[in-house]
Amino acid sequence: MKALDGVRILDMTHVQSGPTCTQLLAWFGADVIKVERPGSGDATRGQLRDIPDVDSLYFTMLNHNKRSVTLNTKLDAGKDIFTRLIVECDVLVENFAPGALDRMGFSWERIQEINPRIIYASVKGFGPGPYEDFKVYENVAQCTGGGASTTGFDDGPPTVSGAQIGDSGTGLHLALGIVTALFQRERSGRGQRVECAMQDGVLNLCRVKLRDQQRLAHGPLTEYPQYPNGTFGDATPRAGNASGGGQPGWIVKCKGWENDLDAYIYIITQAAAFDGLARTIGHADWLEDPEWNTPEARLPKLDRMYDEIEAWTKTKTKFEVMEILNPRNVPCGPVLSMKELSEEPSLRATGTVVQVDHPERGPYLTVGNPIKLSDSPTDVRRSPLLGEHTDEVLQAVLGLDAAAIAAAKESGAV
Ligand code: COA
Image 1 (cartoon, protein in one colour):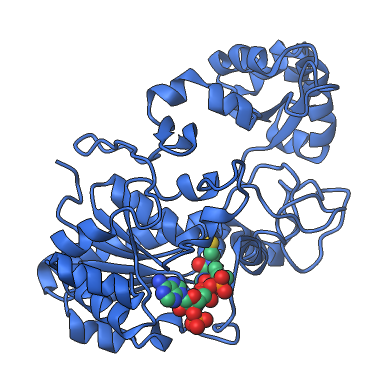
Image 2: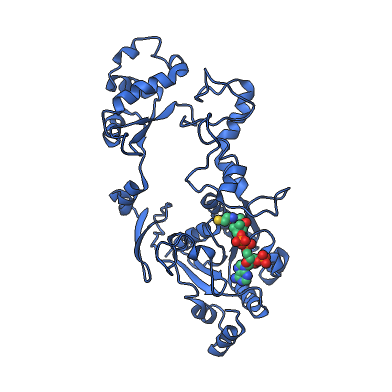
């Protein structure tokens, strides 16, 4: 048995944010019925294709464990089928441009009329306000949610992150909203509206930067590289690779850095482990020296301290550094490339990286479910072909007979 067995999701999502959410729910056992426009389907099926005429990795990696139904929800016959699906489902999820579902005739009021128990969940770029009607993609959200302004180096431009905090991050937020609403429905008997704005999701993930904005009013941010020699303006600056917490941290070069772009390691110089770190890098002298032997004394010269650490790390590979420093309680993390992550045996063993077989593209790698439930293990199944389950769903979920299915096809609705 899976945690969400018996929960049926009407999945009107596309691109990344919405599909991330419904993929998670499918991995927890929900029956996710993805509704796609006949002929084309989710636009990502055709985006960034690596093999001609085959669903892209963009699509396959975001739509595992779902069923695909084609349905034109702008035609009357399609609206009729969509209405019947709303009756049969527990959750409707969508991430169209603002107002798209309303324009099809499915406002929240109408959806509630059709099924008062349904949970109607949406991702939009912005919440109510001046930008609410705007379309939004990942990097727009990173820029408008505080991510770009606070990422990068202070002498460089705002920078977006490779982590898809706007899309996948908001999808995660939405999934939590949905299961929470399902939990409340157990007691109230009613569905509800769940809304996540990408700007809000990014800002939530940048919470510590709003913390720093308020700390600025009381003096410089001493853990930032601008302290003590640089200048602070009136907004949280970009912190380079400084640690966001109370312990200093930075990225340093390791052996081979001249030819390997990822021969780096992150090292946190927490006070409790400074003794071990200083001895390891050949600086036992620091332990007796008041210029170095307290966190306060080191703070104004973290750049010099990391230069000394780097002089040592450059003589070792990033994996050797990790093996030497971890037993000495120095938190550190090698910069792992996507190649290294995809080949890492322990990630394969836990199902975090999974090989999946696809009838048209053959085997490919994907990221499995990062959330591990002891009583609801995830089994990753390939994404559906466009409309692969249309007949099956119309028959088994809506009870349509062969003649009704043929008529729906004839009308162009499916
Ligand atoms: N049958 C008939 N029409 C369908 C349909 C179906 N099964 N599925 C979608 N459509 C229609 C929509 O109703 C819409 O029509 P309308 O413009 O007449 O209302 C149209 O297809 C296009 O949808 P839209 O959402 O506007 O797609 P887009 O490609 O122009 O914009 C986004 C894409 C992602 C920018 C936009 O959907 C958006 O801002 N979404 C919210 C934020 C978000 O999730 N962004 C991140 C995506 S990873």
